[in-house]
Length: 252
Image (cartoon, rainbow, N blue to C red; front, side):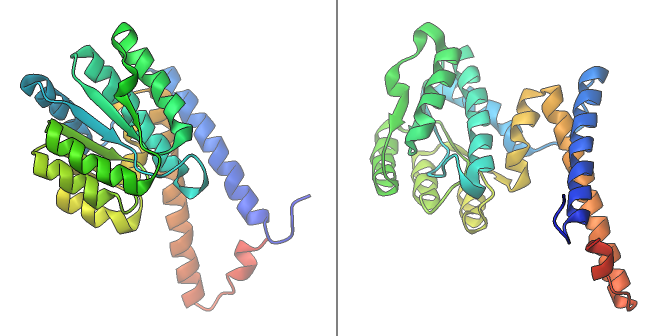
């Protein structure tokens, strides 16, 4: 039994699930990746790794202090997806990569990624666990000044550590790629990083760099669902302006 007033929401949920299943299966069966608009910030990842290889300087990566629960979870997972890509590229080109972990639950995930990517060349010190936000900022300021990284990635649910990490990277002369969906940190990402990913650009990043067909199919479904929601919002606005009681429409 569906609770009264939620029938319309339930219908939308069913449509959304159906669209995801259809486009994921259709994209995989077709075997041809759909076209996604170019995102310069993601294209710059390979450039930044290449610069680190050429100069012999290290790469640092942080997903911020966002965890694996609540509304920031998708951003953290997107940052980890890109970390996996960066780790594999760094291992392929034998570049030095260090992940700055601020959330204990993420440490074993990062370790598995690094072990899979670097194999026998993996070193435990590649995962640097720093338990608090204040300690993270203090550590980074000294670490970047000493190591002079060639590339600095800040991708995930970023909080007010963003400005310190990005400023330290800028002072060290690193190519910086930042991305977050947290509104208050977007200005710092845009102003201090060479390339920025804003909101949904970060969330589709894993599909963009991996070219995984199932992930790309889910991106298409998300775009269609967004178009449906926008269309319904416009319809409600127009009908409301014409004097129709739209509450009866959307509360079946």
